[in-house]
Length: 275
Image (cartoon, rainbow, N blue to C red):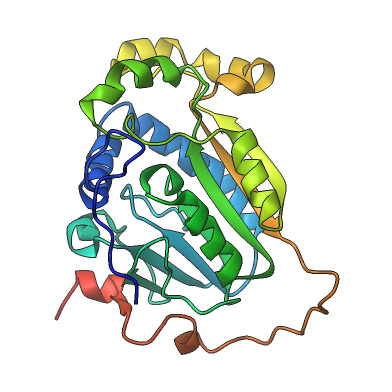
């Protein structure tokens, strides 16, 4: 089993990965993180209801909303390598079919060809090896399964704030922002077809309520006229089926075979309400 990597991410100015993700959760609880969180939930409400299957996995918990609540998929899995500290961020009210497990994005404790949807909410920006994370998506998704990626745009209006604030070593500014074009190339090389892309959050990342409310008109203008300058984006990609290998009929797998033995936690509902 791979050892948990918790050292500094060399190509950016962040510290250890676990502490960076904890600080990112704090950022999402304040403005402008809360505004971004709201828009990301709206984006997921457009995307997830159209993706079907038996199992959906969310990798990393960065804020305390249920990212998967609009999904029609019955069995849901939350994965994070810091469950002890992010336990309070795990949404309340998840049903008994949702479990929280410990693991790292670069080496998922999930059986190959078993997931229907894989959700990465800003997972690639805060890791030592984003390529390995995408390879894990290719390994664990069934043919024609989908990966949903939320990412920060390195070229948008937020770039100015990132240039100024990256020296503080604070997330999200210290993360590695990956452009849509580059991410598309990586996905295509792994055998994915990009099916949907959306750009969102065209206001500057300010915390002043009055100013942000006055600038809300930029959202509609940005989506229509300058999507390149968005603060963030969402990409949906589908795993290709190899033309040389016939697609076998997929029977419903046993739930116990999806997660590697000994790595699954209790359901979030029961773990948050111990008897």
